[in-house]
Image 1 (cartoon, rainbow, N blue to C red):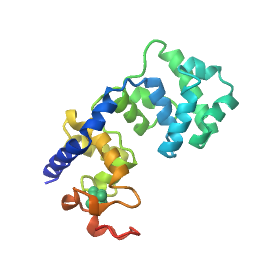
Image 2: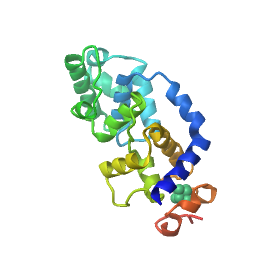
Image 3: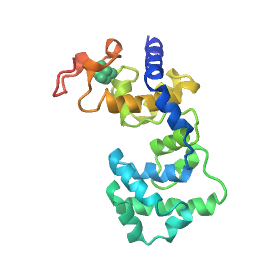
Image 4: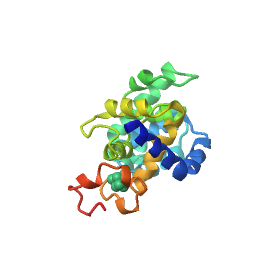
Length: 220
Ligand code: SF4
């Protein structure tokens, strides 16, 4: 049943988000920039992350250049991302390790990435998926909310369970689509606070509308 539901969702995501996703996939993404941007994105909004990342990478491009910045300069550049002192410290630590341990390369395995300061499973999976094109599901807030509302994973499931359950359900060559498709769908329709269920083409297979009592707006 869940597998059939997943097939319907994959078809829906392909019909609605395939073009946008291909455009994103075609972009040449610098892995260092992606890693630092993902650290900046922790506990803040997309807008704040984007602003901080744009400011930072208009000034620097490499780990060496990050280390050349004074702490105050770096903190100022990333201020909009929140908890900027802590993030600046992490970014410098990560830059130092990359220079020392990975001078002409970049950590390619999940465990290697997760050994870097400030890099947890989600940050590692974002870099592996979006940066390196590896078939992993990175569970951001939208992936979690959509997959729980649609009944693909248990409501109580935490990061690793959600990731493993989705990876079991989604063929490798469709994981990027599901990952990014849920992010787009979650931002536009299945919004965290006020999902637009009346506009949703997946409403017939969704578990949420009948149990959406916590919503301030009616779900249907
Ligand atoms: S019906 Fe509502 S809760 Fe369910 S997937 Fe659609 S927008 Fe999300």
